[in-house]
Length: 144
Image 1: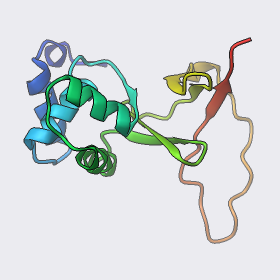
Image 2: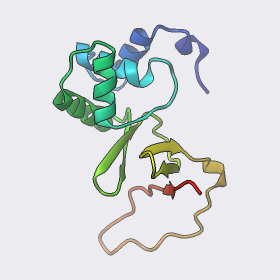
Image 3: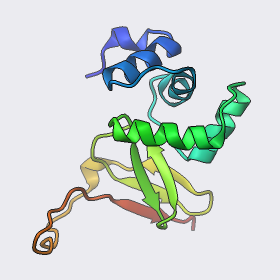
């Protein structure tokens, strides 16, 4: 359940707290990017390029390399999860629980799909010496 006291906090405070709970030092760049990701408390699916553009529009001077490095640090800390589409396009999701996604092919947009409607009856056995770490479900959509 979401803590109502956290929702009422200012975006910068919420962002610094989010970083602190993950053990990340709240540098200026991290706080600025975290504020864009979770400042309003809503889940996001962003690309590094999209987050970089949003930071520039917001007046935050961060390089694209810094955005990539920061998103990688956020992934390593468990704050966001990386969803790869087409083997080369990465989206970063602020919602870290297991859930499926819809990928809109026409506008390259990733959104959450209803998890309660997904049923996976069985997975193949992992090869000897391996275990299944995670199953990502991305359902591709195109308009009809």
